[in-house]
Image (tube, rainbow, N blue to C red; front, side, top):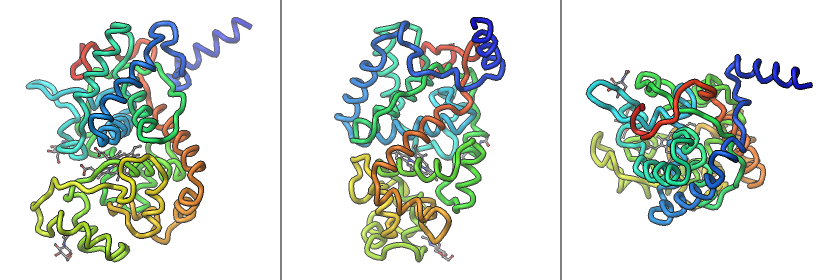
Length: 315
Ligand code: HEM
Ligand SMILES: *[C@@H]1O[C@H](CO)[C@@H](O)[C@H](O)[C@H]1NC(C)=O
Ligand SMILES: *[C@@H]1O[C@H](CO)[C@@H](O)[C@H](O)[C@H]1NC(C)=O
């Protein structure tokens, strides 16, 4: 029996299999981890509701670039090119100071034990919880990368100009299904986007609610470069609530990004959008399933990677 268990463990280790991640990874080594992160996320979101959205997005942008390994957190230096200045992150990814504060709080209760990659995973979950979304057990045991890739960050994260087929094949390249893609897109029920990312949508597209487009236009001038960083909520109905109204918006042609509206544009994903709009529980269940799958992308485990002392630099 023991021999069988051991050989299964060896097999999994040899494969670098993500099933090594487990919710009770820090049960002995850091029993206060979960409440510590929960409290810190509560503080950050109370201070600024948008932060919940920004922290959720950091986890997505970490996992889609060579796996959930904390690589997005590494600062550029004179001799190191990180991911923060990659196209999808530049002037856009935010919340790094909050991750620093959470890392400090975690290291106070259990120094040197918890990876920055796992802190991102738990922080993303607690951000969803704090904004009224579902709670779930996050699988843990990731270690931190000693490298980052600006090139991979440029190409692996889907741009908002993507059409449906491009979204589907991008997510498939990360091992995620069409259903996962639609469910994960529901994250756009919170947070904001910059004018530069939705300008052509509100001036030049036809599959858009006219009143919605006109409401957005005064804050996002049509002239290229003008007001690029002006913000608009991704969910115009309830931007601070993690609910299913993102899908109601798509049905009403109020998707803010071109890529958002692609999910309800007469194609194969229309039925899933309708289902999530009608049944919030099915959205929540599928979102949790897909977040867990996304969190399982290529983790560093065992003796690979390291536990960073400072999330912004390799040890
Ligand atoms: C389906 C493909 C996706 C595309 C094309 C996309 C694109 C974008 C873009 C362009 C923005 C606005 C950035 C800016 O203007 O600075 C944004 C914001 C955001 N995205 Fe996505 N995204 C996608 C999927 C996801 C996923 C899977 C998640 C999380 C599970 C996510 C979470 C967020 C959040 C929460 C924000 C708001 C961030 C904030 O307010 O700071 N997105 N996304
Ligand atoms: C990534 O994109 C940024 C912004 O467009 C660009 O400046 C940079 O050269 C790109 N980096 C790589 C390695 O492709
Ligand atoms: C809209 O499309 C026209 C024709 O392609 C183009 O000249 C114009 O720059 C576009 N406007 C915006 C705001 O994208």
